[in-house]
Length: 168
Image (cartoon, rainbow, N blue to C red; front, side, top):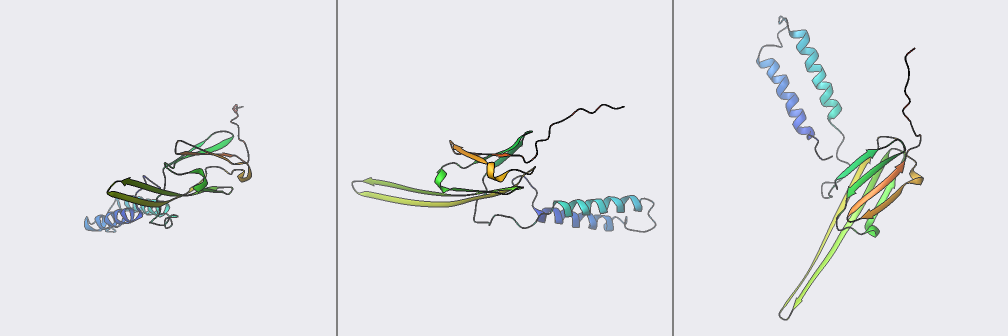
């Protein structure tokens, strides 16, 4: 969910706007602009409720890889950055409306010299769950990994073709 505003910031903005309305005296019933301001405030409150999402789908100790979702007439194509991950360490789960990718990155580096020895092991988990823009055929999904980029092609259930409609 990179790029989204954290829900705490949105809630804080909502409280500040409500306080501003009260501090300026615009919450007074006699104000001639009150109905318009109340409608605006209610719309903002609904917007905040729509934007605030459930708790993160990925635990905090797990990294969420960057992903792009592209929709064509026939399929949904998801590309995801998984540098340094081997294909054997990637698990992909598909349902009609979501894609879940889990990967583990294990690395061992060893350096030996005459009077020096160093061995380091690193481990990280990558997980990402994406809601898909269209219903897909899970059993016909194809995936490939090249140069650290995972590409998942998900055929759509119904292919919708644009049709021009003439006005009569």
